[in-house]
Image (cartoon, rainbow, N blue to C red):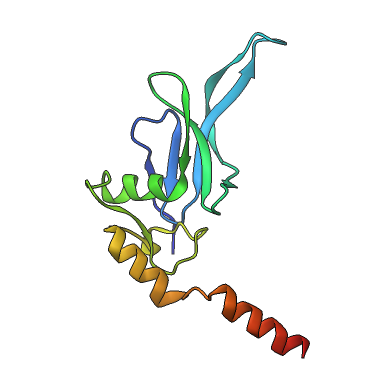
Length: 140
């Protein structure tokens, strides 16, 4: 199935795919040592490298149309592009509870309660006591 791409609102030269990929047509040019850099647009699109934050969600730094840049979570960019801006009081839900799966079909806006229920339903957390008991059983 082919991937669909949409531009990211408020971001220069970037688009997201419904598979969770982030692409750019910008190329950074250095002004010289200590002089900063600027972006030029190119004709080709290239895939951006994504990096996990401390909680394991993928992030990417994107340049804003008005200048400056922001480090954004990829799942927020995908949902904003394909489903519209985040409704008040809602957050992004990963339906399969895999933080790195940013495909459009795996994401939706929902309440914090729905998000917690997803986590409990898909991967219930084991208590420290349970983990210690399992470890002792394995080491036997």
